Image 1 (cartoon, one colour):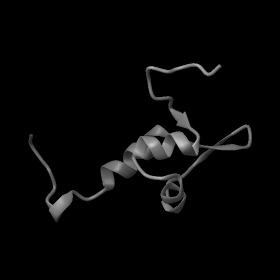
Image 2 (cartoon, helix red, strand yellow):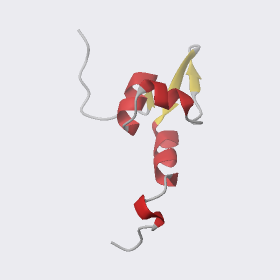
Image 3 (spheres, helix red, strand yellow):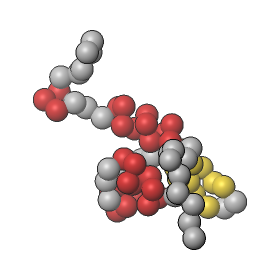
Image 4 (tube, one colour):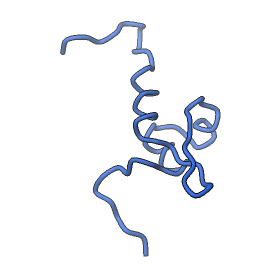
Length: 67
């Protein structure tokens, strides 16, 4: 039985990280997002995933400022 979380864990395995970013696992593997080792298992840090997402360009090359 797996525990359901109502929050996003700070460190994620690649399947959860891919789902968080909204890409396939294969695409995630091609991205240059650093991973951390926890007991010899690679995990993606939510902060690194957020930084990657924040650095993506906006559609049309227009940066969104001032909502």
